[in-house]
Image (cartoon, rainbow, N blue to C red):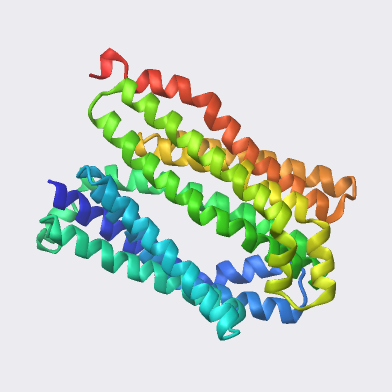
Length: 359
């Protein structure tokens, strides 16, 4: 049954990823229309999107692999897998963007290679654990009841991811309308945020494993301890990254770009961008907890609510003419709303999960 579940999840992830690749044209065209950016910027974004979207099948399949590894109780291997993907991504990004000067194309290609390498490593790990999903007959993969159950969980995660991407697209689009210098500066600051995000994602993965094991074992005390540990590590690390970005961000900006106008804009908004890792630590931790506990529907709904609040905040800051500062404040509110919403929903979800009626 474990291999059948894995085979269905892999098939669903690969098919969904291929659909995204096929639909990249109209999706990208719609996104570019709302940016209002210059033709040169749109050309760069198009290059990034057309390469980056190729990682979708690998990334979605990696969710299935990670879930299977963690479901076997191998937290160590799950964490190793995520660390490997992030290390390859960071290393290739530095080599391709800074070393070979491939700019956005290099960043996109690094992600594609990292996700593909992660999938290959994950499959090797599963084979070593005795898994053989390719031997599952197609008729069993297509079982309607089981496939519907798989798609329900995957669908919640995909909707959550699309909502998150929509929020990022809005951020980029409104930044582009303020000029190429602001757009480029935001891209530099965004990379600063992503570096912290790579490591926060590792803590979230650990939370998935620990909380998933506790839920599977009906261990309410262990679940609370795992949740508290994950939150503590994420918040502590997020604070450390934010302080490092605040006091060391100027050197990072000068290292990434040689354009003085872009450097000046990036330095102006550095304090707001530096706050992002700490604010994001809470939703990162809770994402791991929620996925581990299979509270994916609640995670999806809270993400959609946060996106709605984010859109309302964007309208407000645009009306107040706060410019790029307002844009960063709105994005921070998006991250904060997600974390606070998840924190408020957590006690009730935990009570229902460990209720004697569900034993």
